[in-house]
Length: 123
Image (cartoon, rainbow, N blue to C red; front, side, top):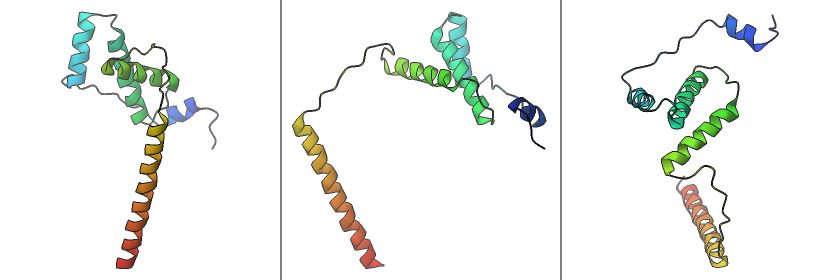
């Protein structure tokens, strides 16, 4: 029997329960941040990421995956001390550095070929 939409499929799969371990360090830390500042953007993002990753892990689809990705990027930026809204900077790679990288790649490829050849002889 074919289902007409995802809602029917999810209803047929049964109810799932999200359990939160109140003693987990992430939950304890999140609670203290929310108590200190109910409007803490990082705490809200963390709670949303925690919830949405639990949904994904349980087999559910989230309605807006790009929102989850943006939250993860913001949290990573905060953790790294980078302004997520900072303008992009062009990084100049000097010609000498590019040539050195290419030579390193060539040498690595030759070494891998030699190693593979040696392994074939041993077989």
